[in-house]
Each structure stands twice: as C-alpha cells, then as structure tokens.
Image (cartoon, rainbow, N blue to C red; front, side, top):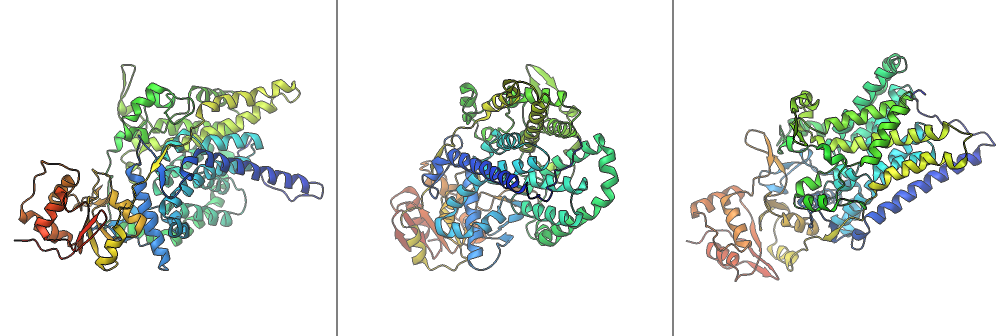
Length: 600
C-alpha cells in the first residue's frame, strides 16, 4: 500500500447517510477523549482556579511560572494589545525575552477572557484537559485520513494523547503536554510532499500550524521538525518513485508555508534572535535529560499498573520524575516490533516503525549507557553526531519520546487493520484476536487520575497593601521572599493571581548572562536577597551583608517599595525596620516600606 492520504469523494445520493454516520462516529470518539481527559483531571476540576497537579507531592515551580505567563498575556489583551515580547514585569530590572522562555503566548492570549474572569490557574486547568483530549483527537483524525479504520484510529489516538509521556509532561510542562499540533503539522507536510491536494492551500495550512506552534512551544516544534524530517527521509528511501518526482511540485507548497511563517512570526523571531536580551546556549545540563533503556519498560507511579519500588525511588528525584517520558511497556513494545516485521511490506507501518525506532534511539542522548554492568560508549550513539548542530544542540532529547509515542500509535493502528483484514473469512472469534492483543498491549498505559493540591494562596492583606501604596503600573517591587531559582517562587504566584505588583524584582525564568549565555534569572540572586530570604525562612544564623552591599543591591534594583509577607515582630520584620524605619503600610500578613532610605 502506498503512503497516500485517503481523499474524501463527493457523496452520492445513497452515500450521504453513511457519510453522516461516519461524522457522527468521529464526534463520539472525540467526545470519549474529552470525557477521559476530564476523568484524568477531575481532582483539578473540584477547584479549577485553586488547585494544580502535583509533582513529588507538591506544585512544581513551572506551574507558577506558567500561571504568571497566563496573567501577563491576559493583562495585555485586556489593554487592547498583544503581549510584549520583552518585558521587565519579571526579573526587573534586567527583564526577560519571552521568546526564550516557555511563555505560552498563543494559549494565553486565546484564554485571556477566562483568565481575567476566573484566574490563570483555571485557564491552565482547561489547557491541561484540552491537551490530553486534543492530542488524542488530532492523531485520531490524522490516522483516519491515512486509511486507518475507526476503531484502530481511536485506539492509536488514545495511545498518543494519554501516553505516559504526556501524563508526566502534564505535571509541570504545559508547552509539551499540549501536543495537539505536531500530528497536524506532520500530516500537512506529508500531504504536500506526496502530492495530495493543492500545494498552495496546503502550504497556507502548514504555515499557520507551524506559526501556532511557535507561539505555543518552540521546543516541541523543533522536535516535530526532527521527527517529520526522519519520516520524510524514510519515506523517500522506501518509496522514491512516489516522493522524489513530486519534490518540485511540493516546493510551491513549502515555499508558501515558509512565507506564512515569515509573515506571522517574522517579527517575533527577529526579537528572539536579534532583539533585546537575546541568548545562546542552554541554561540546563542537556546531557542529563536523556532516557535510560530501563525507562522504556519500568512503569512510573502515575499509571494504574505500576512498579511500587520504582515509583518510590522516583518520588525522591523530582527532576527525573518530571522527565520520565520513555515508558511504553514490554507488551506494546513487543507488539510494535512484531507488527513492524510482519507487515514490513506496508509502507505506512514501515515508515512509522523506523521513525519510532530512530527517535527512541535519539532519546538515549550521547552519554555512556551503563546497563547490567555493561558500558555502551556514548560516542557510538547517533545523537553524539548531531548534538553540536545549531538549535538542535539545545534540545532535551528525552522529550523525543512524545513524538515517538505518536509513531508507535500509528504502527499499532495500521497493523491492527492489516491483521484483521488478513483473514476476512475467518471465524468471528479469530477476527477479534488482533483487537484483543492490541487492547491488552495498551492496558499497562492506563493512567491514574492526576494528583492535585492547592496552589499557594495570596496572603491576607496583599491587595489592600498595594492599593494603599499607590504605585505606578510599572513600578518595581522587591517582594520578600524574593523569587529566585533556588526557592519556591511564591511571589510569581501572588503576582499571577492578583496582577500586583506591575514589575517584580527577581524571578524563576531564563535570561542572558553578561556574555549572552542563557542562564537562570539572577536579578534577585544577590547577597541582600539571600539574607532576606534566609530571615523569611527562619534562619537564626543568617549573616547580614554590609550596609555598602545593601546599598549597592538597592541601587541596582531601584525598587519603588519593599513588600514582605511577614509580621513586624518576626526576624525579617525587625531587620527591615532597622534598615528602613517604621513600615509605610501594614495589613494582614503583609508589611510594606515605600521610601527606601537606609537608616544611619
């Protein structure tokens, strides 16, 4: 079978009812995906504005950061403009370039009315739910276009949309968990390259999809580009007579797509690579973000059938737990391997299977693998040959598993149809054997409902204090505890929930160093902020910096006010009173100083 997409022909008089039936069946499948997504996130829906998913027993820093971006986007829309791409509202006075952060610009702008009405966490709960249902639905529709039956496509969509990779990504990484666009992008690109439809119209559609992904999550777009390039390469090698003669015709479609991307994203990409606060490199140790061979078969704790010992061990490694994306389980891996061998002649199965295998090999990274006391040199792994390429060098390769799961789902769907059609005259029970095997292979992937907990509430008196301070909308404020990467960024959550202050000193984000190297935001990481945070945490041994150092830090920050979530009688309150005198405003749990002159 050639890898060509099924075209919908005009319905004849006798076919209209069947066509309507198929459409109804599609809506039923999509409705089931949505119901499953709500079931998976039901603990969040008990209080969508006040609860978030947990990672290692607590709400992770990234959730607070995404809430901040949702508020930032909504505030811009409320003022009748698009969100700024560079701002000092976070990490003042240096600020951040939003294109270098996971700013979630498109979802934030689209859901701005909900954010303004119910708060940023409610919008994130909606995005999380739509991420599961929408990702499953996107691959389901793509598989249907490429010839999969209703049942096989429905199963394949569920494997992708509710995969362990997306469930674990959903703990904190909304930009990865919302994986709706990658299947559509690859489908549109394949449609152009295989000559399906009109090239220019297909190019416009592809360009719009790519632009939407740019403003949703650029990292997943690069992962998708790598996966798509692999798929096209495998297709061209296995079916050169189908693809190569159409490359010249496909150039018009691809050129159109590039033009649409340039028109819609050109300015944003210029700001990212040539505007203020541009960066290079990665703030992370990228080599640490890789899969281990055992990750593919040892289930994490978020699944219905999991290994209790492994789940307990992972619970003490939050970073690893949030990046545990590779699991598919022995049953499904075995089915994918056997199906790839058995139905190798089918180009759809062959292309998807090879793409799956290469992506998972890439996800192993480039470091030496130790497996059962055997060492496999990292230099022999394929990613070691690619890791120094521009842009690609910044990828966290374990996240290729998201796209790999989609390829595995495609192998499962196409091979299930082939197995069922191999013996059409067989007894009924025999025809159900392939479906039974497929369901049993997928059963270990069934996730448990996400654990949820309350987000950090806004302190009593917070809004009243800012009202009484009468600050300018863009006034910088030093909030204690000062949000720095090494501590829980509570101030980001309070700013996201209330819209105050207008500009926050410090932050949990990414910004360039003095040399342009990407690093954790360090504006608030100064001796004075470290001292104030230590006092806030109750450290009796906190060493005060010199008054000259405090003056230097204040001169750099130039805050219009200091707002501390504490009491005047606490060590922090007493220290601030010694430095700046009696507070300007006090309400509830919040104390503020506005005229910041160090006392002699």
